[in-house]
View 1 (cartoon, helix red, strand yellow):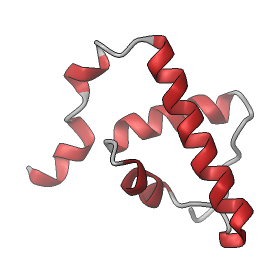
View 2 (cartoon, rainbow, N blue to C red; view 1 turned 135 degrees about the vertical axis):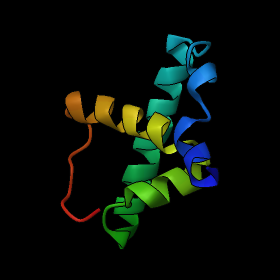
View 3 (cartoon, one colour; view 1 turned 90 degrees about the vertical axis):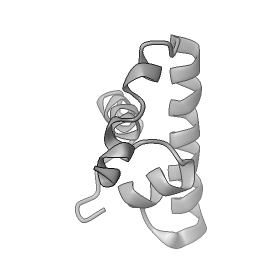
Length: 79
């Protein structure tokens, strides 16, 4: 049950998050991704992104999915 806390803990908070906050978090995800890549560390892994942001995986996945759909991020196989 403990391992699922990262996946499901935010559900009640999600309903309260407004669009402005969501957009800000998308920018944080984008900045982390670009900064990591620009430092010549290659693409940041999804797990590392979740760890550094200290956000639940499901929530980060939704943010990343939005950024992928907008063409602002590109999926790199193996990350």
